[in-house]
Image (cartoon, rainbow, N blue to C red):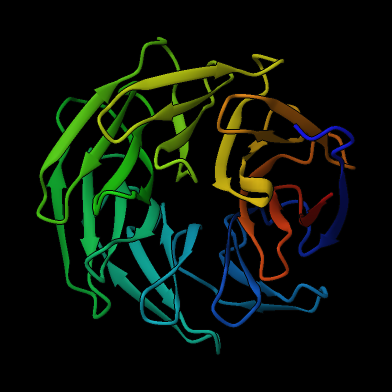
Length: 296
């Protein structure tokens, strides 16, 4: 890390401690959009802290992402729903296979949204007009978790209980790459600035890198109990991740150097994070706040 690197962190309360801010994404309207998983609502917050709540939403909204149509799209894990919310707050819900457990979601290279189905071990695809198809992933009980668009015109996803990283083409061809460390339980995944995919191993306290040809490198965190959860490419050309277990925000360079920043509130349970329109990192804290992390 650059010598003297530090972060200025400010927390904005968006809900009570039981509402559960979880996923967060930057919208096309210059605001941050956050799921309140336990309250069944979607929060919109400007970088200045102005807050609007939308909903309710069926079944606990979890992960949210910017779609190809100028709206935000989200999964509702308990409701077997993939939802769309316009920047004006209009919500449309689309049913997906019952009991599938939709979790991660990302825009694909084909103009559709792709989402993981944790309970049924499949990867789903939904068009912007709500047409759903899905594809099986090899293995039983693998629990596809998060998903991201890769640099190779494919989608990459984590298999939380399959101890692996998967790749699926827009045509539905699936490849699975096993991880070297047992019990890694990968969760968050993102495309890095180096042309590789980076992911968080919540089970063993590693950050992993996988090249598009399947070579895996793992970097141990200082605290193996940190429970890294979400990861994004962020400021400084580095990867940034949440440490759910220790209430830190971590930073790793593409050559594996690690830095960590404690959040102001111990036990704040950081989950999703995103790069905001202001260039800062924004982090969803399940205990009721969104944190802005400005790096210098």
